[in-house]
Image 1: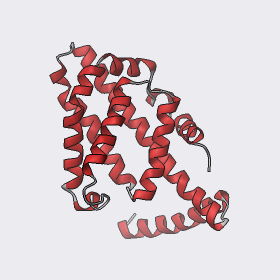
Image 2: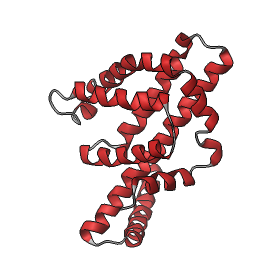
Image 3: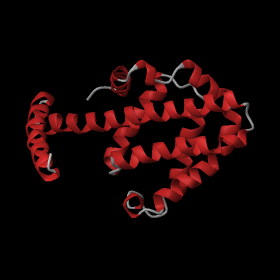
Image 4: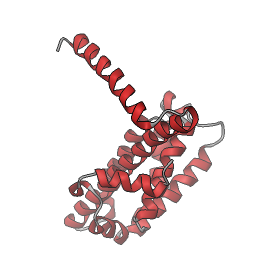
Length: 197
């Protein structure tokens, strides 16, 4: 399996530059870090309330684990808002993809909750009492971070699954891709029939 830095870099390289986090996005987040850190505990509470209120996501957790997970969330939150948002940060997000594989956190769970965090920041940014242009830049920046994070975690998750098949079953990724393409073409044909297309 590739290193976390390689996985993160591959995901970033596939992302159009116009959709990536810029130095300006990172700077506006860092400028407002103290206010965002203060918001962290309520974001963590809302995040885990949402997860624990939904049976499929609640089953990911072990009994009594929530305080530890909230602590981990706050560590991520602090690093995200204080920075730096650099190669080490993105490599960490690639590792989160691996963590999700072993914890059975699915991509739909992760994608929706990354959006939850970005939306929470957007919906509550007025409380930071910033000039409108700064607030808009902060919301855009946080949205970009969430978008890149989703891309890297998803790519890392998928890469881990295909690498595991190669390493454990000896199935090269190229063969896996060909077999997958064949099965997906058949599924796509069935889907078109199902939908009358």
